[in-house]
Length: 182
Ligand code: G3D
Ligand code: MG
Image (cartoon, rainbow, N blue to C red; front, side, top):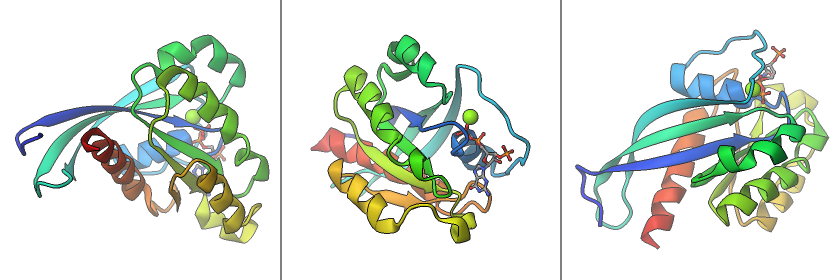
């Protein structure tokens, strides 16, 4: 049982194809700004964030020390480095880009790779760049179908406007907390 003075450590990984917005989502969440310059990520970048989440059942809030892993989109490196990237991860933010259809099915191999290291862990699907909703390349029902396969929720996010960004990180933290209790 956790008390309100306790701290829970969590490692979460963002995965998804190149340029879907993983780095931008983290920057938006941690710094709350949006840099329009492209920042290519070499290897993995680790960012820390402290947040408070409701602890299920006993009505208290606990401190979460979250370690956020930003992993480069290169599939070649994934097989080589997946043990190092994914070891100890407790949650996945699976990011696709609403303007590029392939980025949704592209998540399946990312999730498979992470699950070979971690086993089943909570996943939240993020359909990012929803500010470009006039360029939607897949339908919400296609997204819902994919999420149903994994029994996982989804959110439409925008690293540009900040839409649902904080919510995404809080929801994955909640899912991890609930799983520890279950
Ligand atoms: P990645 O880390 O998944 O590879 P990045 O992706 O965060 O580097 O983002 C790739 C490109 O998408 C960047 O554009 C970035 O500014 C843009 N982007 C990320 N999130 C959003 C979003 O929510 N809305 C919009 N409109 N653009 C977004 P550039 O042009 O700099 O390559
Ligand atoms: Mg990146």
